[in-house]
Length: 563
Image 1 (cartoon, rainbow, N blue to C red):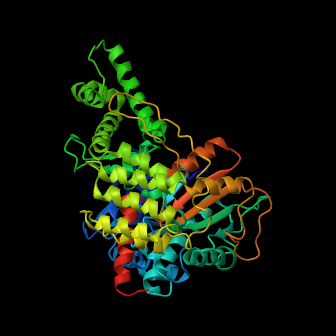
Image 2 (cartoon, rainbow, N blue to C red):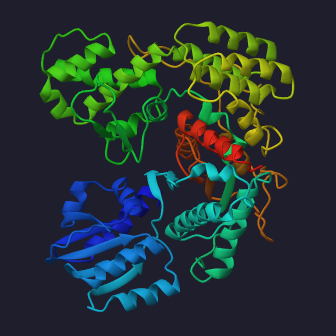
């Protein structure tokens, strides 16, 4: 069972077992959990005729409907249920909670139900947002707090820790497994969460997690985003990751309202479960994606005896717009043409082909002099933004922080002369948070393994070639786990547990957030190694903008004299 299927099964069960017309009552987080796993048409098939938020203030009685409430077990939702059950609007109430329900909450529900409207109370463990079959997120607010020392303000940091433990434990309850737990040695928050998760699974709720044991126990590996600050700083060239980097994806939705060249639909859905074209192309590079869309257009042309000459993305966009029957026949393809057109424009406008090659050199090769020369070349190119220059400087600093401190200061001084919306001292904030002394493992161990770039296929005019050499730290962790070589010194076990043999199920959770580049690595590794299943989760899904925003927030808190 994979993540999306787990959530879909839970939703199907809670709706199918209740006959008649229903209203689906959700909070803000369960709305996201449900929306990425199921479609509106699927809900209609289950006789759901209304979706309502738990905090709704509507007072219109609809006793002909049965309320199916799927909520997170939080104090806020308990208060909402107190008001809902105090004046019930629907004929019946069926309560489902996304995680373990505290004993006092059960008593509270009994006290609230004075009208005896509640028919059942159950726990359905879907307390995570399953973006893809092997990738989940928690969408935690104030994500930057993972970089703040735990002792600074426990009242703010504790909710983050609790949400992570709830999300991770929910994944294992959905999978019906109890793991051994390991964590990044240098991360204080990873150690704290690993120990608290072990306490929950092996002591506080030991009976709930007492599933049938396998010969080799599953592995939960908790790591810190600061162990690999390089991946979220890089431009991306595979479809899903590239859309998130250049435009942004939130819960599998892309907001296109700011892009005037994209007509009509202001928000599009990119779901591997609901969109066959996206499922087939989400990990393809931009060039191959262009070829695949063009093949589809060519097929349509041959079927309809159209001889329109299509040589570029712009030609393709015009063709799709002029042939509404093509859009109807091919469903979602028009949105992919629109996304490709917009991304191609941004690549050209921001000189990202050239910038990206320089980023790869900084991330993967070891010559400081050559790296500095390439950085200087990029900084002089017209069209390269100050934000791109900052990220190039950060990549340089992460690799060469110990070799020439004066050079780093010179880079900061040059950044100060620009107009980046980010403070140039963010470079030092990055080193303070994710420099060599802070990281677990050797982030740049692949510097001599991928010297030959693999050329991306050239799809059609307007889609250029690019080199992709960098592999995220997650790639090397998965390899080490598969070979039984993950170092105990770097990733210690919690408690007396140890692992003999290679685990068949692995969950890697990144405190501070994942990237779509990492989820691609996981999906490809799973496809290549069917004997091992790896799931990837994190507090958020980063692109470079969100990663830098988190650094800014920590810097702001630092100015308030945290450290």
